[in-house]
Length: 174
Image 1 (tube, rainbow, N blue to C red):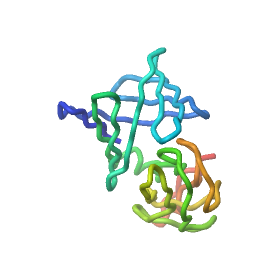
Image 2: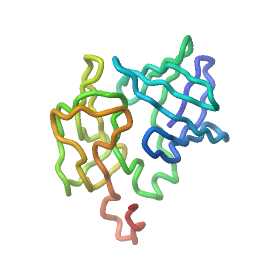
Image 3: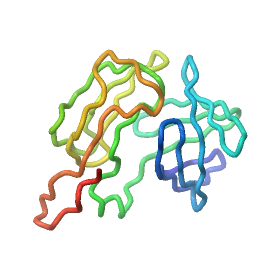
């Protein structure tokens, strides 16, 4: 993803890993470890190096708007050549905020295309449609319609699609 600062500066942003509330991200050349705790009413408290920040977010088309105190940021997905080599932009579809799963538009084993709607969640009285970032196969559905989920909860697991070019494809991620 690209992070656009209020100043107009753009930085590359990559999720390196997550384990429950703990996440590791790369912002530009810097790696950051943080803990994310969802708060009632939406949003989250993010703790980085012992400092706590109240964060609110909303999805707008393909970007995510994030407010941290008086500062605003916009996150936009980008196509990277290494993603094209891996064949899969994201291995999981996660809840961008706490909410309720309204609809699942796919089932396990479905082949999906870039931009195809996968699930709809409702959070803070807004519906958000989550879509595939690249072609993939639905490996596992982790939730049911009507289920309440926390921020960062895994909704759908994806695996690389079959290689249609005749080349040998990369082994599936596990």
